[in-house]
Length: 351
Ligand SMILES: Nc1nc2c(ncn2[C@@H]2O[C@H](COP(=O)(O)OP(=O)(O)OP(=O)(O)O)[C@@H](O)[C@H]2O)c(=O)[nH]1
Ligand SMILES: [Mg+2]
Image (cartoon, rainbow, N blue to C red; front, top):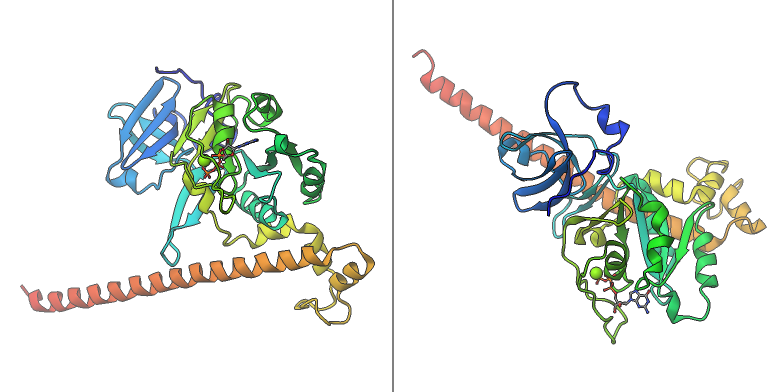
């Protein structure tokens, strides 16, 4: 069935419009899914399946992207700048970047009211959300399995002032109403959370799909990463849900600024230390130690902040090194080629 959309229902924003040259005749389209070498797009006139080739393949298009297409063809002529993007380092390489999803407005950070619930992990996910440019909402599932969810909600609320927390049974249709404010017309949401917390269950409840969910393994209470799509689902209240397995492999890298935002309380104290290179261990005039002393800051939170910082540094360095290596390699190749050319020039010179 072909559904007719308006630009607004597809998530069009002034930010995207501002990138258009007026009257160039191309059609803005949203990328609903990405297959090997092919994308499915939706626009005001319907939908198209477009084969990427040469130039358009180099645009690094991912699900959720806005592109400009020429409907004769159809071909992609341009990819618009993204309002947000999730990316990760490809597994097994020293730093190749893989795009996961673009133009996500809201990120549901899913955890469950059981052993999965872990403040350090939530802080990590918050940093990822901030870095990507998506608005985070903490969703605690499996409330039906415990007597009271209050402790979990209180712990999540304590993550940062103003953080939004919802607790629900992911299998219950009531979840649609609970999460509705982030799923209205033109809004794009994505989910992030460990295996087995109920992401697919929630997707099925929200989108009315019938994705495979799987009983959590008995041995270790973890799921099995059953999910493998790479698509945008329509939500009943007009929003979109991006579902891609890559979301679960997101690591933190190059998120120093996002960490300072998530840990703005700690960063605030750090800024007040007497020494710019304070290690918050023994230095005089250390505002962080003073805050811990006075009870304004919990030592554990500082520890988690520093742990994520050093992980970020480690990951980011690998990436920087890789880039510099690539650059170096590129230069080397260029110089070999240009030497070859010179040689050839010499050989054929004077013809
Ligand atoms: N009681 C209860 N069970 C739930 C809830 N949410 C999910 N489950 C169950 O938990 C199990 C795992 O849920 P999934 O939705 O497959 O988990 P997932 O996050 O998609 O896991 P991966 O695809 O492996 O990443 C399934 O058996 C679900 O039925 C909930 O809110 N309450
Ligand atoms: Mg799943």
